[in-house]
Length: 295
Image 1 (cartoon, rainbow, N blue to C red):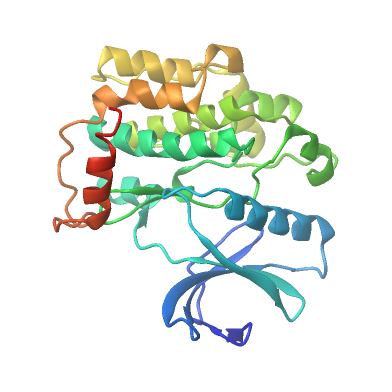
Image 2 (cartoon, rainbow, N blue to C red):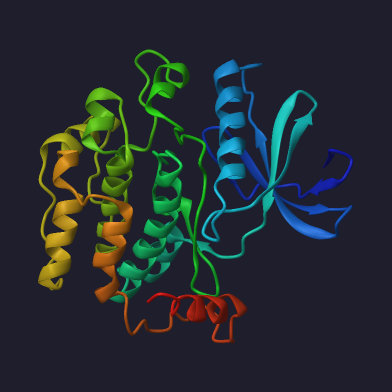
């Protein structure tokens, strides 16, 4: 299939989400690989889905950070909206944990710290992701992390009534903060709670809260204390406990503050065979020198 008279899509999607499917494609005009997200319309036109899809494109256009995909183009094909984005090589954190099992403390901290850097940039623009989870974090061969899928992101809290149907809770239950479940509101600290759920999963190899229904998971998120992880460095255990506090004001102040506290654990990272390249990376070269500026 060719859309926009230039983007040639592969037959099978790379993945599918609540708003649409993502395909690998080729930009005939610029001769480069791209990722194309097509809005799904299973029951005909859906104004709310279309608004959310447009909003996601505008958020990606505003969020200029190496840890977020670049939006190249946006348009309509046969009455379906589409986004054309940077194609990212790598593996999701969900697949990484599924294949590797629990990650070394240093890698779990490094992945979470990189996600914090992206969230810090998003929160500075009053953007709340609202759906941070392992399938939305991509580990690239050079060790960098990309935060994906801003389809549920909010530009400001007043958007909530406009983009949420009555009785509808948007998000993924296993990674939703209690305030999202109870009051349908989310802010920067809700993203930190979700990241805490992801960090717990990276360290243990399993989801923090599970159940046969969404309602059971919601109850656990709101009422149950997370179990301690044996063998974890005490400082990291305390930090994880703060991230998973039920009240937002009891969590770390910001993504930047969390990033600072994760630094001492993200050291001496071992090689992850099959997931990372041992070759010199221009991206790492650039970041290494940049990290010395005003260090």
